Image 1: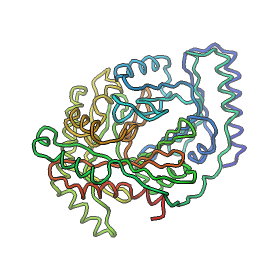
Image 2: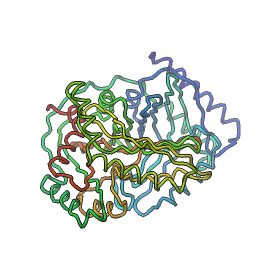
Image 3: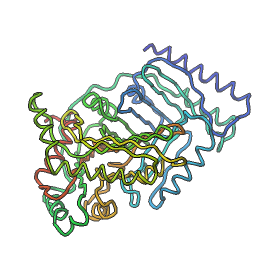
Image 4: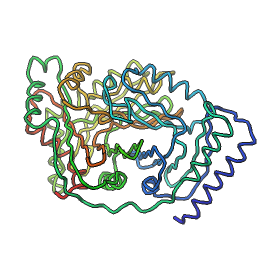
Length: 452
């Protein structure tokens, strides 16, 4: 892509903003956009110096977004409930009739306890500048917040942000490193104890499923480019969601998640039960055999059915209609394959996205059943703060919203890479097999980062 072509488009956007100074704002939140040249979005994002830096790539591969800077920032810490979040969002949404305005962000796995620095229990950003790709069409957008800022000064801020945009440079080449050390929380002995507690008949009778997870921390002595890692991950698992949130230079959360929490298009909702796992085969024959064994495996089948039933039950009060696949199919990734059931609902009028988040998140695929007792067990015994791992990440807007469950994820910090993996524990689960499932789920990201 010629650099001058993008430069001309950025100048055109500045000209539009200068012209806008002569016109009183018609809405408190405004957006300007123009069609622009094709752009390698992760490379462009990695080249920028403005924060936050946000990346979103839909699982259907049609849509991709790279966004920088802040027009409006909603950050909530412990103690803010979903009703307050919904109220803040509804108030903000009422400031514009533009259906293209989007708020990108996420909510933590457990919103009742402390989360990571900078991320909060919930944080959503209306970016200053966005590049969006829809199919083969690229758009350049700038957002303006006249609700809280003077008309002329807000436009001046937007012009300054555009002038600070850097040209895209190639990503740093992939480079495998040798970790200085590794620690697991919980370690295997503690993991074994936790699994045994969950499968104990008296506990299991009331709480048939708990999704236990592990934080694997790897110490490193050289900087890691999170966007290079995400681009490599994207190449390995193209049929996953890929997203990243970098609120400051210190921490970046990236994910290459196969799991959709929900997609809403007006009143139509799409979600899924994704639970039950096995590895991929070394050849097609072995791969099919492993898939068939997964479909016939009672433990994994029960786990997926529990997730399906829970989602249907939670959506029923919010919907005029809910339909779910009776039979599971196989969802294949690079190193593993999952049981999958699609679920579709027609929402009742007036149901908003935060009601959907409240109903669906965290799903039994990352928390357990019943939700309350499973979350209590995790909160009290797992031994680390999940933060946005197994949280919900995506975007809101008036017409449609989409969120992914942030599994297969990493938090990259100076000198440390934090990797996360979980496994559903139900009656019959064996500690060694579940521990190996965690290793299987980390195989792709480990092969990108480290000499194996």
